[in-house]
Amino acid sequence: MRNKTRNGTTLVELLVCLVFLATTVGSMCYAIAQAQNVAANAGDRLLVMGAVMDQIEAQRSTALTTALTTGTTTTTKTGVVWTSINLTTAISLVSGYTDLYKVDVTGTWGNSTIPTRNGSIEVITYMRAPHV
Image 1: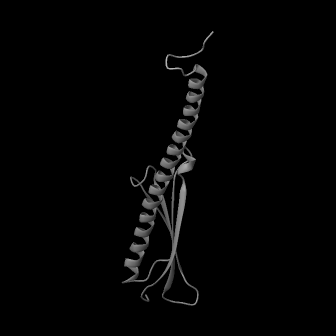
Image 2: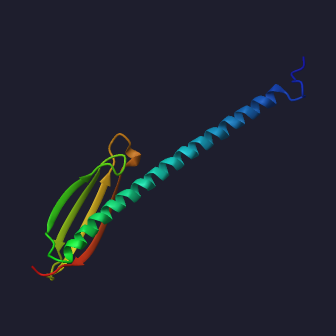
Image 3: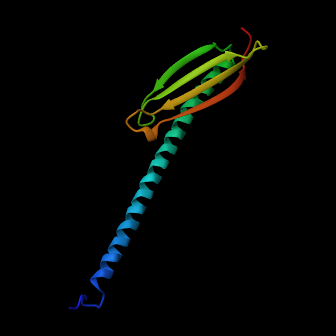
């Protein structure tokens, strides 16, 4: 009994080739999916970083003409990434100074349905503002 195809390759060799191709294609598909997740997360971080920097620049603009208001405020931005961004701005007067403020802005995003797409970015800066 002969187990050969028309061109002389055995069926076993063809099956081994198919198994090898299936495992390599599966690995490549997994790598592509992981790369897409990493790229999506990087895009989210860039957009949230832009929102955080906008908040800092708004405070810097205020500090050019008047004293900053100390305290913590929270705002929510929608439509920037796939979920809303919560921006928390904490402004405090630096001890020993009357015109130096610490501005701490934190941006968080994500929800529990996609835990790999959550994150948080915090930027802390100092700025001088005129005396009140």
